[in-house]
Image (cartoon, chains in turn brown, orange):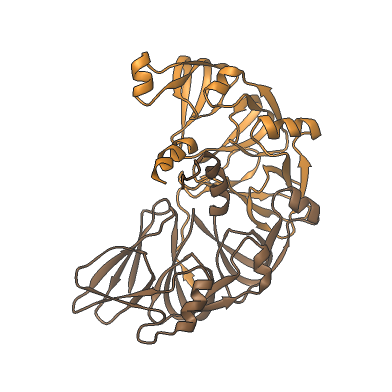
Length: 227
Length: 235
């Protein structure tokens, strides 16, 4: 599976080239164009092993119940993926490790990756992030998307990321809900409120923009829908 | 784990603060490396990530009453955030505007710049924020009744929706309403019809802002109200 990211970072599309026998799993609705001989299978989990429980869990994490699997029939084929919001994408290669992904940022991965359910505890309720996360496990390539640009932060010690800006992080990092700076009052008055504090050694990928901040800027200009 | 992430289209800052504007024009964000003892002031909720030992204090936007005035008339928030590096090493703060678009840094050297409501993002020490009356013409052209006056010596960061276009004005120049972002003090605003009565209202331009004088103006390539106007009939 070969991944090429085009037109970064403003209007990114992922071009995935597959050899016969290779399968790419993607979030439903992500495909924008593909070769004519590509076969699509839609399941609730991994190909040939539909699990309703895992699908239900995925719905809780804000993803759709179905996943699409793309496989070229006899010769190499290609498929393009895109997202609803404008922004950047990254491709990562996992080497028998776990990656915690903010649901909504997952776009596609190789068949060898197991898409699980990453429970991060009730603390995430307060962070402006979702309560449920995806846990990508195994070895293979992964494509993640974001609203805005993506920048990696190498954490060694402690680092603070504002809620809504997290794309993914290594499982080696421990995260807690905290305040920005020394004082709770200043953190709230400064508009930061609760933030996520990462501890340990690993990488956290952040999205530069936050859909939750752009929405309130736009909505006062929108007219109420006439029922 | 490897990532083929490279930094795209970054601009190194040349003013008082050290850092980079990254993410290209479409999604600019700013990385600032604060030296020990250095401070950075931003509008509220602008920080997206930072080193955990950077201090954050919230303060009224230039005192209680002027903070209130700026909130209600200047389109800015009541509080501002002040990030200070009290450690003995360089510390990073990353901040961004809520909308996608370009961010620019202007280094003031005992100068003044007028910013439209919502355009202000951050500044270094030495930059003073004030509110000044922009007049009814500015209000009618949907640019706000007040304007933010930034003055002093230091770096000021401002942003907009879309890309930013700079134009050196000498004489007069026409800008569509709600597209003006910043202008220098030598420039004043006037209101007029874009063309004749017919082309002004049927050509989609309506009222435009006429700027007169000498100085630089900055215009945004898109506007939020334009996006909303396009979205509204679709729902």
